[in-house]
Image (cartoon, rainbow, N blue to C red; front, side):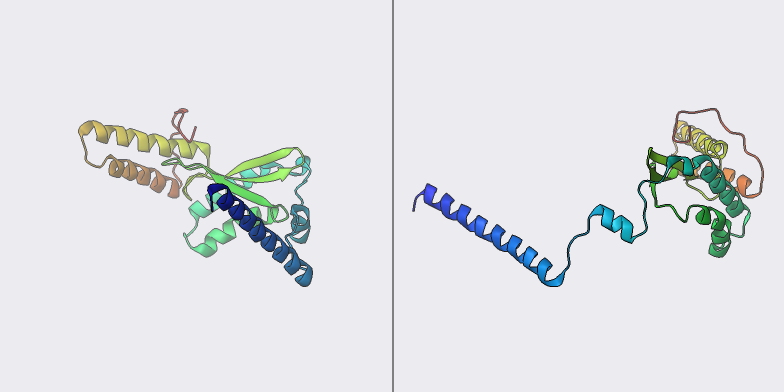
Length: 194
């Protein structure tokens, strides 16, 4: 048997295997009635409307509700029940929308957004800035500034763990926010918080 014969046998064998697989799949589908759903069928079964009118989604209103929910959580007792109660109005407002989330991979601030597909494209809003206590862009810039400043100073001193000093600085800002104190927002640093 030469090289050409081996290739021919291999090709025929591959065709037989693919043919058996395809035949088995369609035989099973015909016998059981089971098949893969199209995206439209899946959306209909799950009550999802991927063509939500864009004018029915007010991302500013959702962002304000999320910020209010965050502030409620910040002033609460920290329990899961209190957090759930704080976010109840927000969750009810978006209950009829099929949303999906994304987040940045930044430190110390990681912005989490929620989005919905509309007939005019994607609409998104901020729902979290990485900590329960950080509810606004100003809060986020204050945290980011405190972290960056403490990290730089620790690095200049030659500290072995500048992260520890930076995290301590963030903890101090978060404690102030929990107590209801205002924190000075740093100017736009170009970082993750803006």
